[in-house]
Amino acid sequence: MYEEKITIQNQSGLHARPASELVEVSSKYASDIILVHEDDEINAKSIISVLSGGILPGMEVMLQVEGSDEREAAQAVSALLHNLPD
Image (cartoon, rainbow, N blue to C red):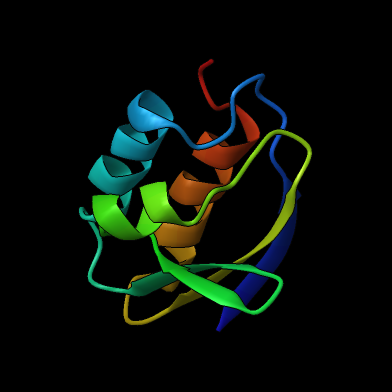
């Protein structure tokens, strides 16, 4: 399992556009991709889960990726989360 702490740096958090991009990238991979904030687990392949997660600017999330293509998935999702559009 891959794990990485990431602080959301964009000005508006995971609202509609960045949430949609996250789901689009995550859905390309077979691995399970989860964002953990406090005790909440957010399925990065579900737009409803991502939007209802309420991830705001400056919040820290734990990216957890597990599966057959976890290395590639983790790199792609991590890169996106570090460079979210506003």
